Length: 167
Length: 167
DNA sequence: GCGCATTCATTGGCCGACCAAGGTAATCTG
DNA sequence: CAGATTACCTTGGTCGGCCAATGAATGCGC
Image (tube, rainbow over all chains, first blue to last red):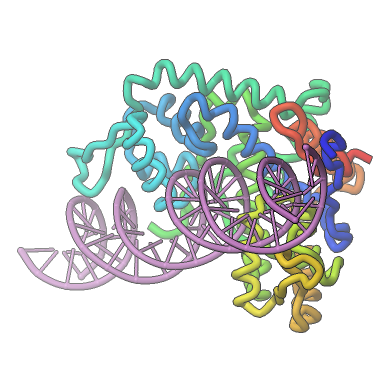
C-alpha cells in the first residue's frame, strides 16, 4: 500500500444514464468551485465572493438592491456575504442619504491589490478549466452553456440573467 | 407597477470577460440545482440527495465508505445527508457485523415509488436543460464537460472521478 | 393628508459542501 | 503479543445558497 493512488473510480449510477448532462453539471460545478476556492484562498476570499467584488469594482458605490440585481442572487445571500466581506475589510457599507431604508455598498481601498490578485486567479482558473481545448471548442462550450442557461431560466422560473447573455 | 417584469438584465462584470466559462459554470449550476430542487420537491428530496439514492438503489446494502467513494463527496457531507435521509425514512443504517467501525446503508422500501418519481424528475430535468439542442450538440456538450471535468481534477488536486469518465 | 401597497434590507432556519479534529476499531508492524 | 498506523465515521464549525417572515421607509391612490 502506498502508491496505487486508489483509482477506485467513483462511478456514476446507471440511473444517471438518463441524464448525463444533468449529472455532469453538478460535478463540474463542484470541481470548479473547489479549484476557484484554492486559487482565491491567498486573496482571502471564498468562492462566490469574487464575483461580488468584481461587480463592486466596476460599479463603485451602489445600492445594495442594485447589487442584488446585478449578481442575481437571493437578497439574504447578498446581505450575509456583504457582512462577511465588510468584516474582512473588503467592503464598506453606509446608509443611503437619499433613501433611508437603502444601503450603499462600495469596495474599500485594499481593493487595488485584491483586484489584481483576483484577476490573476480568475485567469488561471479559466486556463485550468479549458486546458487542452482549442479556441473553437471554447467558443462552442460557451455557446452551449449560454443556451442551457437560457433554458433553465425559462418555464420553471423566470430569470433575467440569460436574456442578456443571449445577445 | 406590475407587468414590465423587470428585464433589468443582471449584467456580468466586465472583469469576468477574462473568464467567460468560469463565470458561466456557477450560474448554470445554480440554475440547474434550483430546477432540480423544484422537480424533486414532490419527491421530498433536496437536490443532491437524489444522486445518493440512485447509488443506493443500484448498489443495495453498501458500506458507507463505499458510498462515499461512489459519490465522491466529503465523508462528513455524506454522514449528514444520510442522517437526514434516514430521518426522512428513505434510508436505513445499521452497523456492519463484519467490521464494527463500519456502517451499512441501504434504501428502504418506500424506495420503489420514490425511485420512479426521481427517475421521472431526472428525465424532465434533462429535457428542460437541453431543450432546443439537437443530438449532435448534446453529445458535444457532454464531451466538452467531460474534458473540463478531467481538467479540473488534475493538477490542483487529484480527483478520481474524471478518470473513469474519460473512457 | 391618510392608508395601503411596494421596496429595501435583515433575521432565522434549512441544506449541500468543505475542513479540521476526534474517537473507535481493525491492521500492520516490530 | 504490544504499539503504532491506518481506516471508518462523527462532530463542530464555516460558507454559499434558498425560502419565509419581519420591520422600516417610501410612494401611491384617493
